[in-house]
Length: 191
Image (cartoon, rainbow, N blue to C red; front, side, top):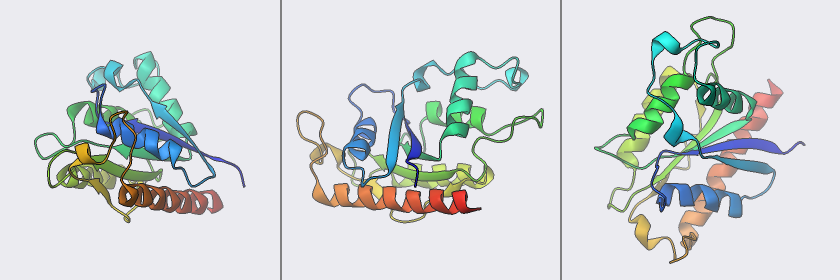
């Protein structure tokens, strides 16, 4: 079986982000069979503008992100929680990925195997942000992993001083999430 290509996106722009650290932990504790690429261009994606949403007019960085999502076998999205929801920069990127007004390119998120996780320093972690993100993926008809839910609460207690994930329960859940994502990828390949 070929190695699955996973595009991982952190909804946080913060340089010391626990969500970005979770994606690095996914690479480190990968149970095998997946090549996880962490996307780092979220900061540069301009605000969604439907007037520019055609293959010829889209900003190059948006076309690049769409190409990467289409080429990936699956997505791994780590979201912090801002105001009980997902960060605007993440929603903005998903808006650019959810369209095909020309009916010529296909929808990058349609039926895309997708796993969600998130971290926050609060007692509820990113539970509400993940619920909001799941609602977005209902509209895009993405194939989202339902369980396990990886909601890293009190995230500042789960990483060491160098930013390494040290919490064994979180590591186990992260590995289970990657296995569940692989199951969805394998099912999509069989269709």
